Amino acid sequence: MGKSDKAVLDALLDRYGRTFADEAGIKLSDQPKPLYQLLVLATLLSARISAEVAVAAAKELFAAGYATPKGMREASWQDRVDALGRGHYRRYDERTATMLGDGADLLIDRWKGDLRRLRDEADGDAGRIHDLLTEFPGIGPTGADIFLREVQGVWSQVAPHLDERVLAGAAKLGLPRQERSLARLAHSDDELARLSAALVRVSRSEKTAKEIKAAATG
Image (cartoon, rainbow, N blue to C red; front, side, top):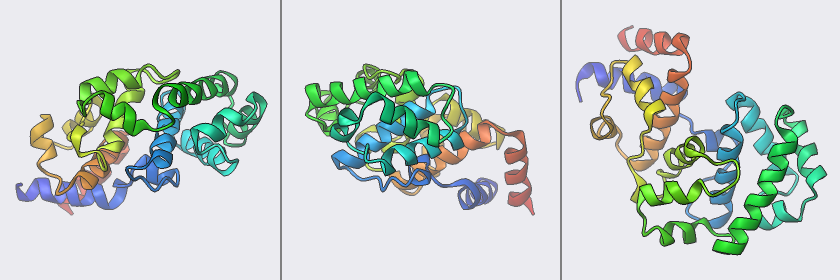
């Protein structure tokens, strides 16, 4: 890693190196509950709505007791709508409430509520995991990418997972735009997940990109 790349990386991780799961209060580990919480968050982040609102809505759902597939399934549709509303996730609240209920049903019925079983069905293959994730209501290719770039911190099988949005953020900062080259800048899978989240934020904001460049050269 050159000095310039290191300076950019240090500034980037220092300012924006927090995963979206962490922001939502998810203590991510290779266990059924936090993995399900990440799936819920990925569903919310998939809509055309700000990340801040999606994170707030996830927190409200979890605080209401819907942090497991069983809890989500047992909640009434109106309970889910109300929790989403408290997080200001109002534009898509009714449709999303339905999708979260249907998704919980699918996870329980097909994988006994445990996303590790989905991973095992895919033999740990990232492409196959991506495809299986898109079977959940509300999780399209974008949602599957969100899940994988966050879960790579605890699922080494899928690392590196740096989708086009991450690579676009890297290009704005003059970092490598090739997945393997960019991945080599991270010292661990956890740091790779943090780097991915930071670069997604950069991809969405010219102001953020300029801030990081200024900090790296200052």
